[in-house]
Length: 378
Image 1: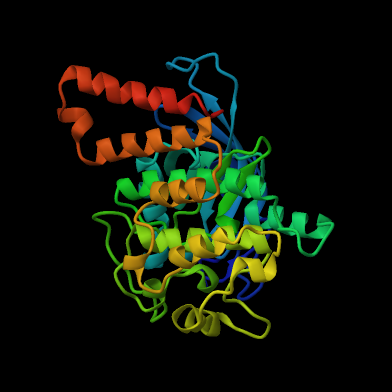
Image 2 (image 1 turned 180 degrees about the vertical axis):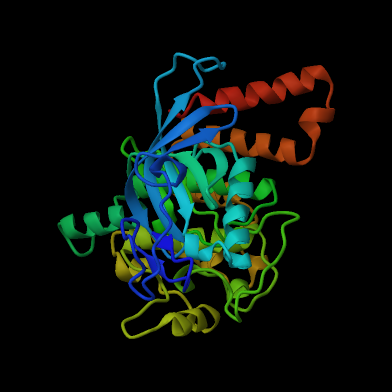
C-alpha cells in the first residue's frame, strides 16, 4: 500500500498514478520501502529481508522475513532466522493513537522473555514506515485448531478438544499470563485468535496491541472499551480498573471454548454490544450442560473463574492452574513445574530481587530460570 501525496488516498503499491486525483506517485527505490525484497537494517542483529504478505488486519499487514546476522557480529555464521514483520499501515502513521498503540505493543514485547510469548527482535522505522520484527511461528491459531477439532468430532457429547490436549495448551497460556502479570502488563485481548499453536504443540501468546503497560499513556478509545466482547471481563466492559484477574477471566472463556466449541455469552443474533451486556448480566452455562462427558468439577472451577466480581476469581494464573490440577487429580508434569518456576523468576525480576540479592541468591534465581527453560523447545 501507499498514500497519495495529493489527496491522501490509499492506493496499491504498484500503481503509478492515484486513481482518485490522478497525482503521479513518487517513485522510491524498492529497497527503501517495506515491500517484498526490501532489506531492513537491525541494530545488534544484522538485517531483515522481507518476503510475501502472510496476514492483514485493520492496523496493517504482516510479512514473512528472514533475519541475516551481521557477518562481523557475535552471531556471525548462524543461519538466517525466520521472522514475521508487522507493518503499521502508512495511512495510520499520522494518527497519534494508532502509532502509539503500535509502539505500546513493541514496548510490551521488549519486556517479555518467555517461551510461550512471541519473541521480540526489534522495532524499526524506514522510509516513514513503522514495523515490529518478531519470531515467525510455524503453526496456526487456537481458534482454527478448535474449529478443526469440531469438524472432526465423532460424537456431539465429546469435548471440542480432548481434555488433556486442552489442559496442555491452557497450562502454557496460564504460565505466559503469570509472567506477564508479574511484570505489570495486562494483555486485555486474550482470545483464541491471539494464541498461536506451533506445530510441535508449543503455545505462543501474541498481539499485545492494546496491552496496558506500566508507565504508558492511556488513550481515548472513542467511548468503547478496548477488547473483544465475547472474552471481556465485566470490569473491562464498564471501563473499570483491570488487573491480572481480568485477563484470567478471558482465559477461562478460552478454556470454556476449547471444551465446548462455543463461548458462554455469544448467541445467534447478538452483536458486539449485546455480547458485552451479557458479560454483565448473564450467568455462564455449565460446561456439563454442553459436554456431558466433562467432569462436574469443571463447572465449579469455571464458575469461580467467571465470577462477575473479580474478588471471587483466582488471583493468579498459577493459582488457577493448581486448582485444576488438584480438582481433577492430574499427575504433575514437568511442563507445569517449569511454568511455575518461570512465574517465580518473573516475580523476582519485578521485585528487583535478582539485582539486589547477594551473589548466591542471584545465582539461584538464574539457575531457576535455566532449569525451567529446558522444558521448552525455543
